[in-house]
Amino acid sequence: MQRLTNTRARFRRSLWRFCLLCVLTQGESALATERPIVIAHRGASAYLPEHTLPAKAMAHAMGADFIEQDVVLTSDGVAIVLHDIHLESTTDVAQVFPDRARDDGRFYAIDFSLEEIRQLRAHERRGPDGEAVFPQRFPAMNGLSSVPTLAEEIALIAGLNKSRGHKVGLYVEMKASAFHRSEGQDLPAAVMQVLEDGGWAEQPELVFLQSFEPDALRQLKYELKTDLPLIQLIAENAWDENGSVDYDAMRTDAGLDAVAEYASGIGPFLMQLYRGADDQGRAQLTDLAKRAKERGLLIHPYTFRADQLPPGIASFEELHRVFFEDLAVDGVFSDFPDRSRALSERFVNQAEKQR
Image (cartoon, rainbow, N blue to C red; front, side, top):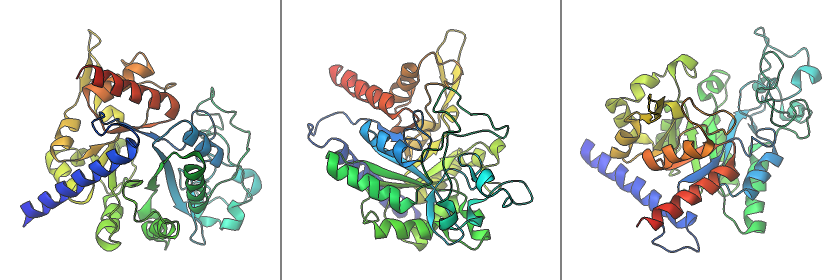
């Protein structure tokens, strides 16, 4: 029975890969080389403040295949697009509501109603010291946009898909589902409701759902019965992303076997695939990608930043070459979707010339 279940899971993933390829190669030859997809990480976040509607519109114009949405809930259960469960890193909440921090000094989104969230202005990410995390990017304190709801962002992308004639998909991450559950909120169910209301719940070729928490993905698959492809994000244990998950164990053969039971792919930290360069400058790779592929899992590593290259990588182009050619990943999360899209297309062109 277990072998039959695994066979069915592999068949579903193969069918999904075919559907995605059809979408990405619309208007192209059916024999075209499959191009690694480009996922706009928090939108065009290298150019405009992350997770704002302007950043998402720019990512769409830059040719991203999918645009990422990190989702948390307000106190009244509305899904909003925000990378953290806290507000102070990317909004002016400390100025607008100075007395609303919890005892740890953090401002939690779930403590604010949507009406209150509407009063905030989003800005470029700042660290605990108040300084811009990426000082060369958009000025940190210029709050030109608000915090969007998931429904608003989906409506924007759907509208752009129609007006521009270019289909871009959603890549939705549920942030800290266990935390939300402890606060009396069901984040996966809320996300699925928004997708259903917007007509996206039955479009597996255009929607990914991702989480660092296996329980959230299992809830989506087994309780909420979604057929949308699920991606298991993989953190480093040292980050304490989720204290109940052993990500080192997840990267073992047994761990990947378990992931393949409920997910269509993995989203590993890029340094879990690439370990640096040796004395001759040759890329040192792990076998995680190979073992994931053996289990039929897609591989979408994060995060590609031209202004924050991994050690041993001399250029953004070299970074993509290692991951597209040497590791043969299926897509990448990029802060620079325009540059990653151009390099993805170059990879396809070079591969076709070599055929």
